[in-house]
Image (cartoon, rainbow, N blue to C red; front, side, top):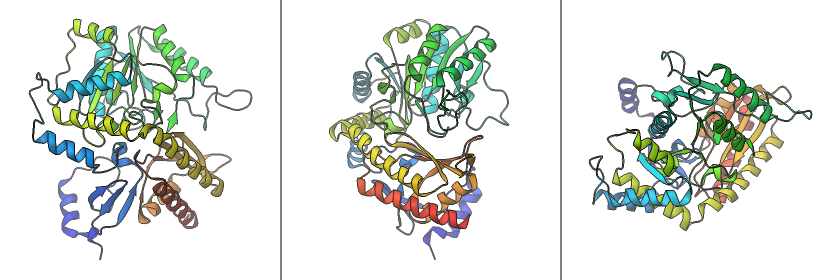
Amino acid sequence: MSLNDDPAFWASARKHLTRYGPSFETIIAERAEGSFVYDADGRAILDFTSGQMSAVLGHTHPDIVATVNRQMGAVAHLFSGMLSRPVVELAERLAALAPGLDRVQLLTTGAESNEAAIRMAKLVTGGHEIVAFAQSWHGMTGAAASATYSAGRAGYGPAAIGSFAIPAPNAYRPRFTKADGTLNWQAELDDAFWLIDRQSTGNLAAFIAEPILSSGGILELPPGYLAALKTKCEERGMLLILDEAQTGVGRTGHMFAFQRDGVTPDIMTLSKTLGAGLPLAAVMTSEAIEEKAHERGFLFYTTHVSDPLPAAVGVTVLDVVARDGLVDQARARGKRLAEGLLSLKQKFECVGDVRGRGLLLGLEIVTDRQTRAPGFELGARIMEEAMQRGLSMNIVKLPGMGGVFRIAPPLTVSEAEIDQGVEIMSDAIAAAVERH
């Protein structure tokens, strides 16, 4: 009998835990180290989601453990109006990495950082209308939830007044095409903003976007799109907010994903990857925007703003990323992983598309490669087969798309672990196809 089948554990879980999303995995996670999570039987499970897409240094990284122990022994939490050295150091380090975004506020979660960013944009512009992508995920609180369109809208009452959505560009399933059948993202963007202009009351405040929409099915903004989007915002007096929760701190092969395009946002939010699995987020903006917000009485005062413990962890994350060359490693390891996934596409007809950048990749499952019919059921079976073989992957299911695996191992993943993951995926797809 497996120790994961502990009757008392599951009875207590069923009795006392609120169910907040998809079904829980049927394992009991006892510990984690590096690229692996270990269940109650001591079985190693390769973690290709980096926890909740956050553990960029893998699990229980020794430098992070040492920092937590040291900082807990000094000071972990303070009155929100007090400052400590780790907070100022992390702000300085982040500002140096993103020239033009010189002012930093340290918070806790991605949703919280997006709340602060949207609040700041509304105050500075005087508008209240927020535009996001129809496949977006920016959080489950207030304004962040109102700008989230990939899931969680039905049944919760009205969203914030002035919430608008436009389609995200999807090269695999293009809505607007050129003569050769490829995505015409400029025409799609022009059309989308034509509709926004028809709906707006003249109070547009900001556009909030992920450079790669993760929960939206790993949809990458194509080269040139971000610059065109920034222009659309400038023409309307809007601010551009980039949510780099999953793309920041090296995952895409750049420190921040926007740097590939040479387009600096007005506000950037970081979370997930910045704390390497611990709750840490940041809102970064220009000196001019922060000054204007301050003059108008910007208020975003929370219990854990500027806490020393997570800030110290953030400093350590940046230290390790720089010391170990993990930005370049993400690019190299990502290339190896992408090649492995493309080999699966050549081998299996149900693999419709492979996309993404660095170590944030997507693999879309379809039942028919010609029609691109979604393969939700098959994708779910592949995920089950992979877990049985010791690989944890996450699949997202969205209307009009196939089941898309979000594949994001830690930046510290080894070549051998990548190869192992691809091999397990191959076996899992073969088994699922046979069952299907």
